[in-house]
Amino acid sequence: MTLPLLAIACATIITMCYVGLCAASPFGPCRRCRGMGHQLKTDRRGRLKRGKDCRHCKATGRRIRIGRHLYNQWAAIHREGTR
Image (cartoon, rainbow, N blue to C red):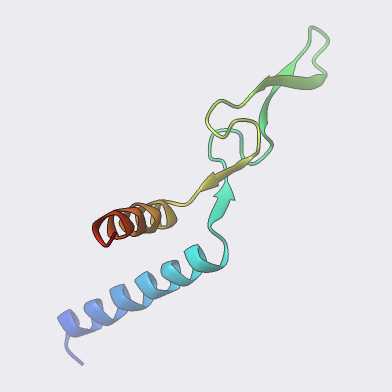
């Protein structure tokens, strides 16, 4: 098997795995708050306490995956075009 063909096969396998992941679990943990929904702060004594709610995920701790977002956009455009 030649090198370009092997690279294409690997890229195809990785893409199909990501498509399957987006179909099975469209939401992933938020990158900013690491899935907690809020930031952690320390008080003056050094103890951890809850901080502000995460604005990125709106305090849910989950965010939509990029592949799922692209699919949702494509589906909306397709729906609008076939009405």
